[in-house]
Length: 168
Image (cartoon, rainbow, N blue to C red; front, top):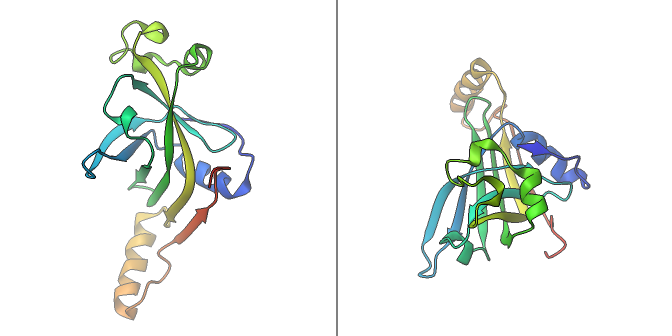
């Protein structure tokens, strides 16, 4: 995923955490109230913290973008990020062409000119992240120490960031 320099420092660290995690699980609330999740390939995080994806219109998810969660996981790096916000459909052809990647061709065989191709713009309102030590050995030692002590020891940083969009 391409990461632009962030306009706000509070989302800058989040951007650093997810820059090498190419797939997010996107969860939306369906019309019946149930939750539906699907893997989505993140294309870019722009300077405002907006995350961009390709999508097909019409699609089930395009009708349910008022509440969206993105979950990024890097098990080997012990990094987990949850972004909550909302989505919007964007059909700006120049933006689609700028973000186009041949990796999307299986879903959009006509390339950036595919008739159902659109952008899904995810606008974050809040972020939670858990960033543990990168070394498995250190994580294993800290977990053992935590079990022995009966409290978390050196298991990493957890932080919540709110008010990320102008809408919130």
